[in-house]
Length: 347
View 1 (tube, one colour):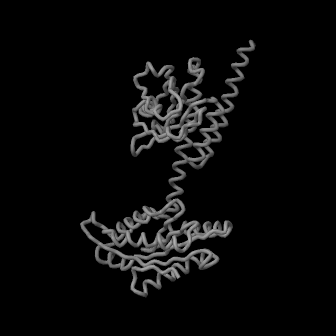
View 2: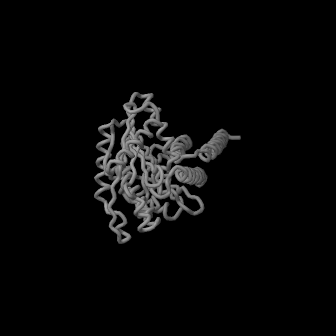
View 3: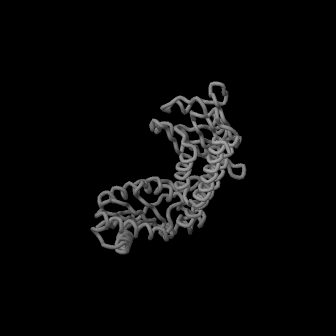
């Protein structure tokens, strides 16, 4: 066998081996983050591109956004802020049609847009764009820009890329489904906050973290005042919609290190990582202010105003265990209930 032919055979054999590994690796990943990381590593291993990107479809907005951008210059942060409409540019066209596209010269391609180039550290000259597609649904596209040997790309290479993209699409869909199911098991279906079961898991983890790092962790326990009157007067469906509005108010205040949960009925809990008593009190007052000023069920033609009773407890100031912190915050909340409501107890 001629040397050139043997080298070509070895190249094909290596690529098939890598694709087999890609299939096993990607389809065993259970989170979207893991899948995206594996796409990154495997694409780099198989094709060694200098400039490439992974764009995912935002189906709600019908846009593409850059999930991964890789460039030899590493100046790629601004590109990630760029979004393309489905059908816009080469990537948008591929996302819309579900068909791969090789463009040796963008100057001769009417579908090309220089919109991403405005924030790119390079000027696009050629593009190879492959859809991530499953059951005729495009989840994203892989895009290679200015690949040095683009002129030598042939049908076999495109088929290899399509195979990689097919594995990636399956893995991405599986990971999204897994995360959705996982989210349902820890989420309260009325408020969208964490449910009581997951609250206890978070609290245990956060107290353990605070103990290990020598940090504080605060907890707010609050209960809506006279909520039963809403159910008795307007029915439980209205009551559920009011709780959903309450969930939105609370979610709007939660930062990266704060976790909100519906404890049960009209009781809610906020767990606050790395937060002392005074910070928790300030947060609680802001939440109280927003709750008191909100008009609930306005969309239903009602105008319901509510207050709440709040209790705050902080590790390690008020207790050494998650149970002590939770129970003390609960007790302080009930102290407010017995003293006139619509107030905060923290000591």
